[in-house]
Image (cartoon, rainbow, N blue to C red):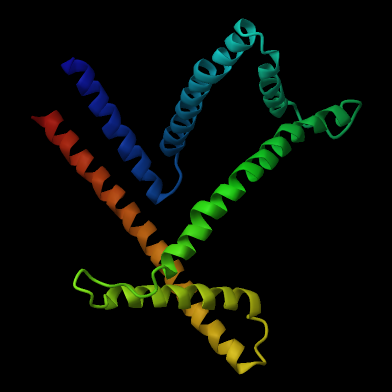
Length: 219
């Protein structure tokens, strides 16, 4: 077990250093690590889909007398048709778009109402209800009240900016749009800062893993 742990630790250390070498430019070792990641991930998910989706579906279709369950699988196999624009197989090869269109249409039809209900409506509702918040002693919670007011102003001004930003001849329309532009820039900057900090945390955490592995191998 100690030998297996040592081999695993050495492999993790070497692959981590190889991946970090990509910071100085793509090289042969980095491409090997990249190919390993893609190949292992594809093999893992292919095995999971095979044993958790395809085989149980075929078994259900055979045992329960539900052959229609095989139809989605057969449609999925159409994704692997070669795209041939010339020759007699050109029309047949266009069937590769059929499962993609089916997936997009069904996904949109199922997720659009859920997305609108769970995100848009509830987010707007949570931003404005209640507009005025009260504490346990009956006094106004100014922090929550100001937050609700700012939420309403930001939502309205950003929508105003996106819809009517071209009407710069009207001073009032332009001023409200500029307020929405500021809120939009603040939101984009916050998302970018969050993504940058999260990547830095992962980067620092990986360095910590390298140090811990080196200490384990040298001890």
